[in-house]
Amino acid sequence: MMPLASLESPPISKDHDKPSSSSSPSSCSFVREMSQPGPSSLSKLRDLTLGEHLNHEMAVDMPMMCEDGDEDSSQFSMSPREHFDHESELCMRYFESWAQTRQTEFVEQLVARMSFHQHEHIYSILMPMLQRDFITALPGKGLHHIAYKILSYLDERSLCRAELVCHEWYQVITDGLLWKKLIERKVASEPVWEGLSERRGW
Image 1 (cartoon, helix red, strand yellow):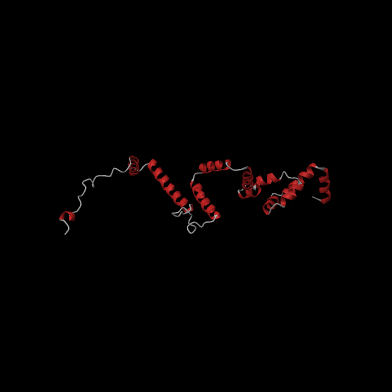
Image 2 (cartoon, helix red, strand yellow):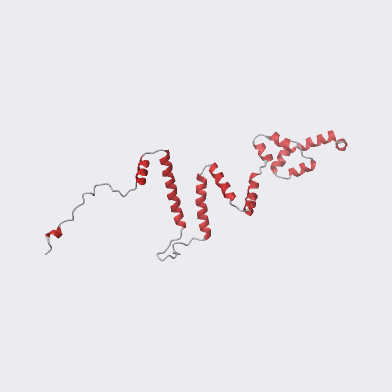
């Protein structure tokens, strides 16, 4: 028969209600700081949230390892292109969340690390973006007279070519009576054009 002493419950420690001393001073100070909202605490909380999100996203890209150290192909089947697309999407999310000054600073650092051939390729992309068709844009802003003034400096050969650029340029030349004004200037300044005007009855 089992002794009565063995049926007694083990003695309850008197220290079970005491706070655990395992928490470090730094963690306690962090908890106290988070309990008092402020600009610095909110900024730290935001950084922690972003960091956890980034760690979670990066964990998706990391290969799953088996206990023996081999990669689990069933868990890691993304192709190199899929990895690139996923990582670039993460970069774009962070880039779009930054202010324009931060975006510019990041791009400057990125370009500084590129090769000469990469610079050439980027230059070929930027050039069309930096070009503007002022002749087409000015009339839409109510500045027809500026477009007329610019094209009025063309000679007859250049004006003929300008008409063929696009419909908008042709319309500006027609509305501004630029051919009429060109002929009037030629007749007033050149004898050949003056004689031609008399024969044609201009």
